[in-house]
Image (cartoon, rainbow, N blue to C red; front, top):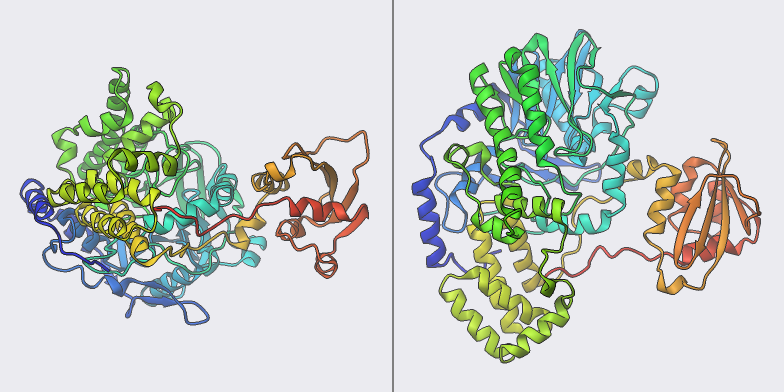
Length: 627
């Protein structure tokens, strides 16, 4: 998709990295190859209609020395991550890697096999299970474990088991306490904006190749198949809890508010194996992901890794996660976990030290330096998270968006500020000419800053759009971080070809079905068009006939509130329906035949439901980002 070659200034920086980073250290390649059993040929997965939902073969170009258009460190990481197949971690524990953003793990029991983290899509999870069975026998699934509440660790669950098997009690589903609440909330409340931004983060619309998408650092990209969810049947509620499923003994460590709001580590004493979920991988992870999320807590994250060392290191010969490759050897595991711990602790503590000296997030991000042991370890490099955006996130966590400078307290929004900047700089043409000088000097960061103002002030200025696309391209070529590269190149793509929308799997019916009534009402409240409904007033009772629950909805002053408390006055209307029909009703179809199909009964003023649903705004999955 690239329009220009790598510029000389960028090529020089890539060469510098080749000289300062430890490329002679090939231990990761040995570990990534260890235990290989077999692969899927071709490594392409399709859905029932024949649509490709995963194509790992599209990364076959990741061989040899890095081209000038890819950061050599990211090229190395992508070449490792793109390896796929079934691997033995230790006898009895196997992983299928390279079939999604995450990995799926199989732990063999007395009767069958436990599945840990069944990927994003049912199709990729089913393909992984089929590959495992081809080499290890047709073992039945006897349990499922979700290590945490992110979609790439549960979305493919119906590719390895069914709701019927879980309901029958033959397949227990284990997860950390709070799993459902956080899995649902993250994917629904801000789901539209997160999915649109995730398209940038993973380069979903980019061609794959040396000038396009080469991987996201944590995994190559996300699959786009059927996204499902089965509610856990057994919660892990305390560190030290032990469970035996299909003869497999497991010890658990809760790690909430680390990489995910609900997360846990698993230790398998008989195998001397530790699963660190996503809290210790072969990259610096995100404190705040580029797609958007709540800021994570690196202080407690580091603390959980210390606790994992204290609890399990003495009894562990291999550490593995749901991304990347394992680390073998008791001493190597201890060093690996210790460096990962020190990485998050250092970023946290040094950010706090410098913010208490008066530096703001952007200043800290430029000044902070990792100690040599962290700078020179491949698994602490910023392929997915980065030192820069993680430090800014830590600042945000403690200090918020405002940096204390009154000039930043009431700034103009982007378009209005851009118009003024461009006028001050002598108009659009003059600004582009000055930015071209910066581009030619290799100051791509400043060129992007300046050209962004021109494009916001004059979205149709062809020269500005072209030069900004070229600038984003160079920044992408130089990025060591996979998601930064994807974001820059996605920006270039949209400037050249128009908005590509949201080519990322959206919210699935399975996830919506797990919403509690209170969550559904809260989600609806975020869609009320406030100014349009300032003078609208209505009350509506929702009676769930199968759960004997009753809620009062009230719309007034542009605010939708709900209460489960008994009400003193009657509502204008009462809806009677089942809990399962509530998410479908919230979809907005109030035609009599649609209501009848859902079994909805209405007493009172039947227009109230229509008035409520008419007050809802529809999210825009195609909103502008770079214009």
